[in-house]
Length: 459
Image (cartoon, rainbow, N blue to C red):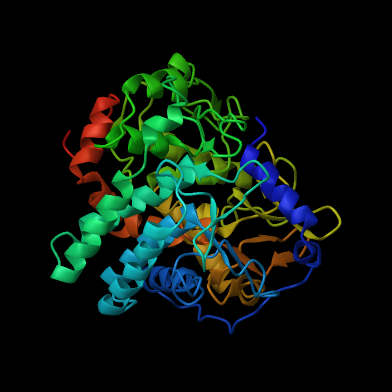
């Protein structure tokens, strides 16, 4: 399946002068890190570093996440705020507070600024656009006809707003007000509008100018599961279970009996029938939603996401194309910056069925809950390998993508890639965000409405 958003990003990267300027060998180095860190020390370091993207390099007015940060061109798209990446950033900051990486009071002030911005920003039947101007709050079109509400990006943000509400709801008076604001924001989304007049499915986009012209129905399996969960959980504009079963689950056709490396793939990954897709499909929906012990009539979701990571790791070890550098400690294919055939930097959704020899650190690092040993090997490679560590680690942790085969590193970051690292490492360490999200009563009820049950959380 041709992914609409990937096509837009590819177009932007191909047309963007800064994208074309990055040749092989461009990098931004930092002093080497010692090689004697304990597991806890290196996990702390990885979280502190990735947090910097959303703390030190946030869009200055809104305090939300910039779409991208290029160390070789810091002014590139400096005003573009990304909705989904900002949601990941909110969850990252919650972890930073809990671990003492950032002062709680200062974080609360920043979060107030961020939520005030979201409250006043453009919304389209409650949904935020994919991109916003960080100064004005107005929509920045993601594409010519994509200049309205983006329901999927909105669902990533709402996943975070639920976590934020749960984290602060019993805090100080100021924190409780912040929790209430987060609750009001997420309840303002008109999920039922995005069924396009009551169809049994959700649609990704709506524009006041172009209406439903994009016509992108949310059908599984990809990164959009959380969109149906949030729509079912809404207490103000809910979507009924038929949209999930007939739209997302394709009346049961979402189930797939295929195997890779003797591991069931469980569901049919869009565009990769019988195989697995890019790794972010097992991250975005699961920053808050806990897959441990989670099941419905279609899948055991822990098996689904764990096998996704294990299959990707096994693929790297098998290395069927023969890329230099793939191994049990260098693995992970997902959507990220990529190396074009002429050496310039582009963007691609890497997976076992679209392997360009490009490793994206977020793929393995955000899979820590699923593959702790394999992910730790990757983490130690990027921070401790004598030949690569100084090239791979920049001002906010591991750069977005690299290739040993091509001796190539891109000195750039993307919010949606950097933003899954801290939350998923924390879910591995303590289950913090999983517990916050799953304790929300409307989340529990929404999951039950769709036929889900969780042994981990007792329903």
